[in-house]
Amino acid sequence: MAKKTKAQASETAVVDVPAEEHAEDAAKVEGKKTRRASSSAGKAQVFKGEELAATRTPVTVAKELSRLNWKMNTPLSTIEGENINIPLTNPPLKAVKIYFSTGINVTARNLSNGVTIKDALKAIHKMFHKKADDELDLPVLDTMEWTEYFADDRGEWNAVLVKQKKEGAPVSKKKAKKGEA
Image 1 (cartoon, rainbow, N blue to C red):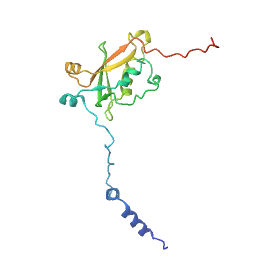
Image 2: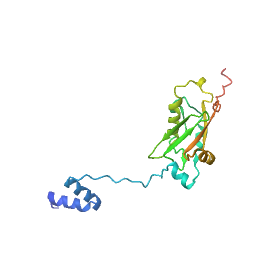
Image 3: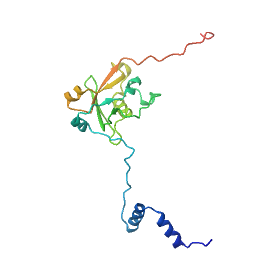
């Protein structure tokens, strides 16, 4: 088997390279900057509220939110066993305005992937993290709700209303064995 010279080895390498990569390499040699192509094949489309309002597309809020029983003044790390990295709404929205019955509102944003449950909870926690339990009338997040009436009334299709409750679901306690106690 004969040894290949450097020139022959580089020629075979150029032949194996696809045309797009070869053009990119040629641009680097000439000193031009190239931009890496982005892939949008795996990403879901994320909407603005105005886009959905124009087509009057209804929005649904994730049902996983009602199972959290999360106190709004506690950190997100206290939430166990639930996936909070899923989209808050379907279809996904870039920004969600969160309204409370007390008149307070907060906005959660995630422009690239759409607002997730985690993004919404972070925005809520940022508002209530300095409050003590006794300062909050309804400290536990029950659920969020989107209604067409609410959207038409306020003119904001990306708005949700928070429902709160006094206490979370009771935590099951293990029964003591007969020999203990």
